[in-house]
Image (cartoon, rainbow, N blue to C red; front, top):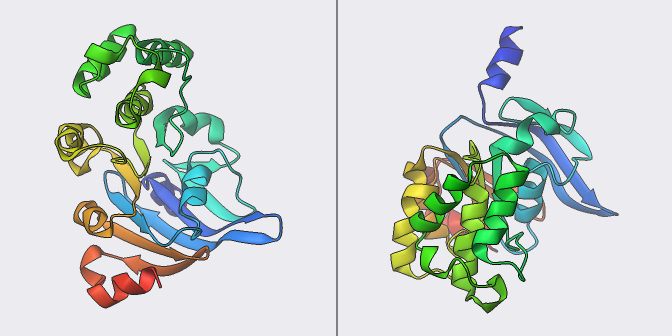
Length: 234
């Protein structure tokens, strides 16, 4: 293996000119960045900037139309099969069955991914959901469903967490309890999409600003002053 290829395999993310379109509309245009393992990338920008599309490409749910994408050392889409089990996605939708209980949902996912059932009980306890775990998801509040979705994301102990508004519908006490699992100290590589710039910047090692699919800022949180931050949402 050459030096360049070996270097790429050491990176959690390596994007070079990533472009993704929906029909004639360009959702992402020539996005280029690298992220080392264990670091957090915060993705900021207004609605429609391309943030969710970026997460879906990284999660192997969407194919790039141009450019090169490598996740955890594997090229997408050619090697998507090799990396899917190492990626945890927390999206706007919980990706759970509403008619099943939280425990039933997680046991189903555990079976699909060959995860021991003991992991289900461990995670339900960790997010404070064990007491309500046997009630149908449709009867639970949005905050409790969000906790169940976080359990689903963490079941297979993924190396990369793709987090789209992870603390939505959660009160501050619950957020604090979840920090060891999905926060900056969790020991995971993270891509964090948030409408709370101040909170995201506190957790970020690298910041990506998107505007209409294009990179409007790429740098460390310390380089993003108040004026530049306001400009990301102009």
